Image 1 (cartoon, rainbow, N blue to C red):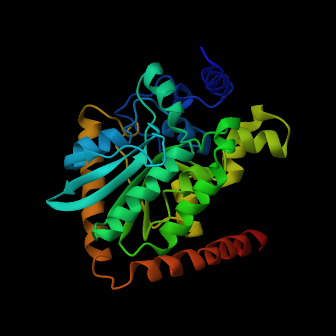
Image 2: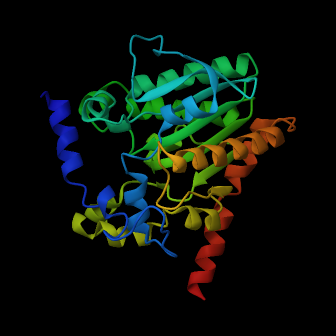
Length: 308
């Protein structure tokens, strides 16, 4: 095992919030608790049985043609992207890829992209704009890869250029947070005209473990951090960060079985509806700019409620 694999395994072992903690042991998939804690939703978002970008592409799109490489000398398997048909319409599809086995996870660094991945994103975004294809992105990452080699190859610069490009992209951009949405590694693919979020997905500035370690110097308080961070879909809808919550079946989203068909149907309908609305806009870049400029209003309103 090389240094990269050892570092990833160490990070994985340190996570106190694991998928098996998502629900009580006596709960079945057919039972849906009235209220899940933020920590339970984090655990569901990390579940290996949850569908990822690859599963959504296979279920919702046809004729997918994967495009690899950043054309600068590197390929990053943590970013999956290409051209596909969505109900007969050409679109560009992008998303984070984690993998479903240990080997796949190590190959994709548990969905943590490198600079080459973000430069591949930029290449596909420019092609989508050139050929006037709408862009659909799926978010599922703990964050950008934190290794020294990634920083040496320009991790921050690559993410910043993704943000700059997305902010001016002259084509509709639709984002769905399907699992974890961590830090700039997620935001680099998430500056959509519409940002949708699965009911048990999470979206935050960093992991609860990292938050607890920084704020309280105690990562064992990650469960408490989940409540403080406002990272659930309901919190983010109230803050104005996302535009819609997509309901999940009992027990959370699954990549197989009846639950999979239900979640794929829900996402498919939402994408059709929002994409039809976005394609009526004459200037997607301007409306996207206005959306993110006004996002702070939601934070101010929530802060005002909490101080009363």
